[in-house]
Image (cartoon, rainbow, N blue to C red):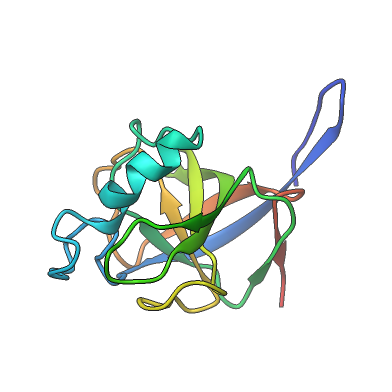
Length: 161
């Protein structure tokens, strides 16, 4: 665990190892869902931007990281957007975003955990041990690769099993 101090609070990080898994492919548009040919993230982008979250520095797709046997507990998201009516095909959804740092080989990538609220998500449901990561484009990151991530424990805490 790494602790960083600043004047207002002490920040603790949860470190967890996970395996890159294949996802549904709808966030990026690779899944060939006719409803979202350019991907769901591209369609959601403007709704997030209007609420102060600019995703333009990130790849418009997600990395699915399986952190099993661990699970997670939502504490206080960096961003929470309620009732986003982004699609003509499904009901409005809520979205959580959390800071994340991914470590791969000798490189560090900063991004966000993207989490459609399980309470409002209608399809393309993820396993409860999968975290969807929005990061800059990363070359040579393949399915089956093990990587480490750091999460701010006051946002999203990891529960070891």
